[in-house]
Amino acid sequence: MNEKAIQHIALRVIKDFADFIFTLSQDNLSEMGIDDRGFLRNSGDVKLNLKEVLIEYSAEYADAINSGTKPHPVSDEGLDQIRGWVERKLSVPRNEVDKVANAIAWKIRKLGQEPKPYFDNALATAEVKYHGKLDLR
Image 1 (cartoon, helix red, strand yellow):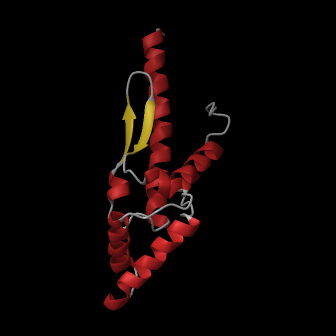
Image 2 (image 1 turned 180 degrees about the horizontal axis):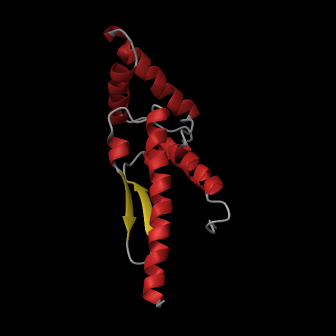
Image 3 (image 1 turned 30 degrees about the vertical axis):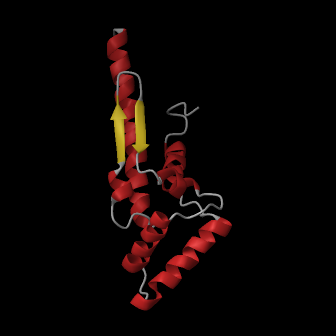
């Protein structure tokens, strides 16, 4: 077998592995109740080129959701996003939306955000499933 054919087969195996991780991460977004409008889910992709396979979530907040954050200021735009989330996801009377959104923003400023490891959990599951089959280092 020539080197090019071996490289092609190896990339296909790695692509299948990446597709498994990606599918699990997408499932986790739903199961963990993270992606209420689909922006994070739709930002995900598996990209294959001649040398590597990349699993990518391009939404600017993807890593912050997965890994959590340290305490940080919440911008006016961020507060507007939180208000929208409160309106969509919580059964809060309309006159209470600002109060709840401000409380969430205060928590983020003082405590940060807890991780919701949609991707890390998928990777950990894949590491167990494929243990000994692929060198994951």
